[in-house]
Image (cartoon, rainbow, N blue to C red; front, side, top):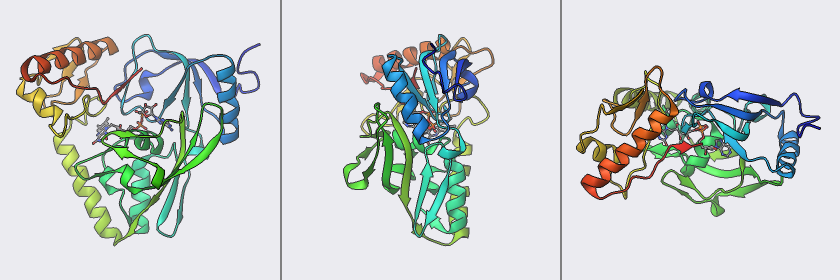
Length: 292
Ligand SMILES: Cc1cc2nc3c(=O)[nH]c(=O)nc-3n(C[C@H](O)[C@H](O)[C@H](O)COP(=O)(O)OP(=O)(O)OC[C@H]3O[C@@H](n4cnc5c(N)ncnc54)[C@H](O)[C@@H]3O)c2cc1C
């Protein structure tokens, strides 16, 4: 019997992952799982465990490089409506892990709640952005979090409060397999002023990033406050190309995938950039992009 008997509406086999990532490269998922709701997610996790099937979690694929071989496991995608809810209560907003962060920002601005606009122009879902503590010069998502509801590998879900959560540069101490939802505490402000701030941050991003080309944001983490992009730029690597992968001319810490690009091209370019920067600055760059 198939491991997913009874969950046929949620599980599909051999699903190409490339179109589900911002790089638009990489191979298929052996199993692609879109659960209906929390209860079904828990049941599927148990079944995956019983069958020793590795579990991966996909948000909007904005920080992800999938290898050309794809993923020999189950990719869970919290993309059904049950995981995309956004609900307001006073100064708090609770959002499902699958909710799009840009939509969340717009709804908060509309309600006159400020705090999340620092995430303008950072593509992703609530789950992906909380996991990565997405952010930048204008702030990060972790500083607005009140609580996060997660599910562990046994299908148990529980809520972790702000006191117990640690958000650091592109990192959180959330180790549970799945983030299901998060609540943010925001500050009341004038909707027009919030919208103006969102626009300003968005324009800044548009002018400094290669948004017209396939990419996954910053490839490497900054090193103790030193910009990885600057190190790459000073090594003279802007425009360096391997196959269809190129170090962006616009932002040295971005790699863009040209038509025909393979994941292997991007992986080779990452290796080459890391080696050249190490030779010049004796600094080993750590990847920010998640590689499957
Ligand atoms: C043009 C562009 C600009 C960007 N600019 C920035 C920026 O300024 N600052 C910044 O921080 N990032 C930036 N990024 C990267 C990206 O937007 C963030 O990392 C974002 O958090 C990715 O969210 P996602 O939903 O797409 O996650 P994915 O890329 O799908 O996944 C990222 C990681 O989160 C995990 N994950 C996803 N959803 C869940 C969940 N529900 N539960 C548990 N784990 C989960 C995945 O397993 C993976 O490990 C940029 C990307 C692009 C393409």
